[in-house]
Length: 306
Image (tube, rainbow, N blue to C red; front, side, top):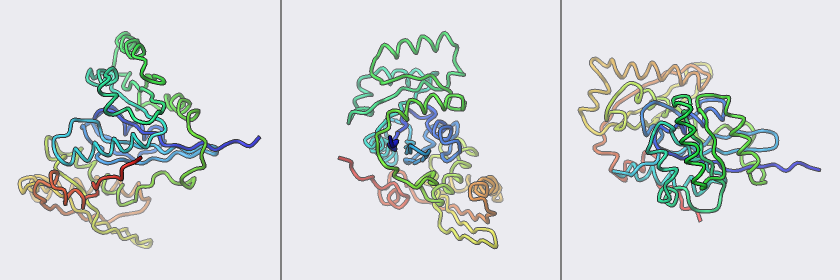
């Protein structure tokens, strides 16, 4: 009897810093989503594709669920809702050490707002169990299992590859029968430009504190592939105020140089080719609250799904 191919969308959702991007990278077996200790690292929906002979999983990594305070955050939450509406399977990941995450998993209001919609299997992943006492974890697990709102519950550490097989067993058996959406060698449907801009933004998140990383957006202005020479990449870092521009550039350009050197190494690893990276900094006043700027930066609203 011929084996049927299974294929479907698996959305990863949860609060900031719950471990969504780390989980995606672990399941794919390679890093495609930036993951830092800072909240709200992910701003857009990131697609990661895992393909085996008889199945294909399209993972959707999403921004951390928050109450939006300005236009950019509103658009981020739309990415979350659209991704959940697309899901054949939903993974709700929570940080075992954060009471707010646990309360989300128990809250009918949270489930109604973010996890409801079409009927789909929803799994609860209790993450970062390596950072909690076993007796405390057991109490959390018993409490959440009694809630009964999930198709299954797993205690994991997204940093630990040992949990990959268990999670995959949960997912694969519930994928709908469907032909593969993408060629077998696709790891994402995002462009190289997107990933390069994310690498640069990751270095900004790692280097700066407070409001600076959240006021920055990276746009790839030019990307020339040159087989015989270094690829040429020109990127602009947009900030909201002149004072932020001064900080990002640094005294004598020392900070922007650090960003460039660190990003270039990771970009060369990603592209498997040497790169000449050119960085500039420009001001776009209050871009996080400006519809036109956000649209130009790729935060246009996703189409509604019926």
